[in-house]
Length: 248
Image (cartoon, rainbow, N blue to C red; front, side, top):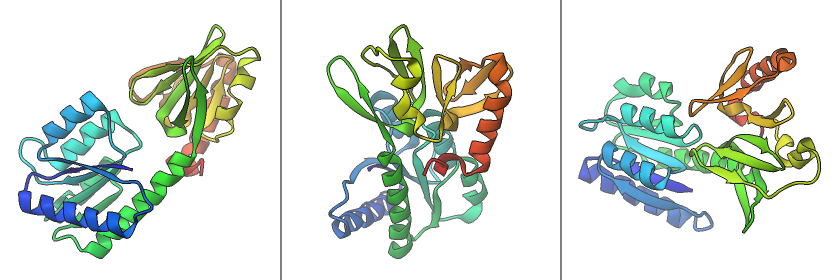
């Protein structure tokens, strides 16, 4: 699990780093990495250049860009990362829910509560990572978490997998039907076959219209007229039954 810590206050930053170091010693069987940032701008620049993290531990009160604004910017780049807020004030608690915060802890942070929060995040992360699909490309086989796939599209006899980081993976050609070729994807409840050329991750769908599915990243997938009612019902059922954790 890749962790990013962002806190502009040096003393609190070091205290949190030490707690994470202690947690890593307590759980030597868990693979954890930590990157530190002193400002929201520094973190955002790193994410844009190198990609995102699995868990963000953010201070709320920071100059230029506070923790809630930073969380909103990170949410625009990733729908699945976990956000844990550390702050001296309870005033941001309501706003933290608007960016789907995983936890909200008051400083000085008690180690027991912090470790419990890390435990919950790691368990959820492990569940997500178990939900993967193997994609065969011309030079390798890539294991991609289901949550990272926005949708898959048939392009001739190949499949393009559109990921949440705005990259596309091109698979090798397939000889069977498209539906047979995406059997591995359709085994996951969050994935829905739409028409004869698309498989969509319902988690990334933000709106269903009579002509399109609107996805995160300002993407669109066409909906056949005959499938509108079915797609809308499946999308509503997905969120009513737990959203991101429905597949588990």
